[in-house]
Length: 142
Length: 154
Image (tube, rainbow over all chains, first blue to last red; front, side, top):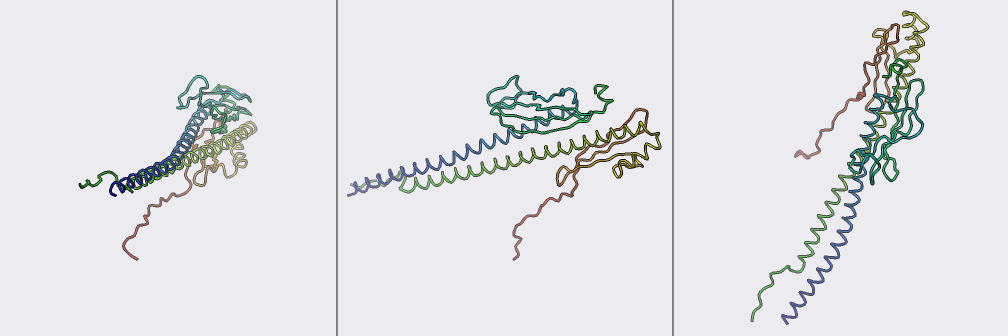
């Protein structure tokens, strides 16, 4: 009789363990999906912050010397970055690209559009800026 | 023959452990999600504020270009006395005849504006000097430092 109760207890324990493992698995799967989603969102917001900083730097460099950018309606790539936001020489996998989309000039007022692109072709951040250079400054090449 | 009492995990113990582990996972998952969402909101606000600043900055540059062209035209046509009179007439409230400064302001956000002040001088060659180009806070910021804690009354 005692042996039968022990066996029943073992069986109950095994069933409980089985249910616990299944429940734990489901819970872990749900939470893991949450963690993965959090990680993706975190990477996206980090990329956006970095894009703003890099574009801002490019804008300030443009404002310091707008003539150096070169007036052109054609887009040109200024810099490439890898996935860790280190500057590299060419486009790399999961990297980013800073582009001067257009640069125009009208009576000394330079307008430029800067854009940061991801490798997949998504625009992460873009900003348009203007800089006025009086004729005397343009002649002096300042 | 007596049997020794079982010392292993009793039935129910595993369930309690699983409930505890699940709770831990759920709490950490929620905390991580909350922190990430806050980060995302912050980076979106930063991007929006930067865009607003450069929009205001571009407006100020366009104003400066327009003002420079007007001043150059006025200088070509007038002597010094007439130049100052016509500058005052052309720019209205934006020109201060006493300090001979031109000012421009444009809104960046509800709490900030971009202020530009240009010092004018009359000389053979036009000389305008930017004396101020700055984002200034336009409202009094009052931080809510109150704490809604029970103080032992009511």
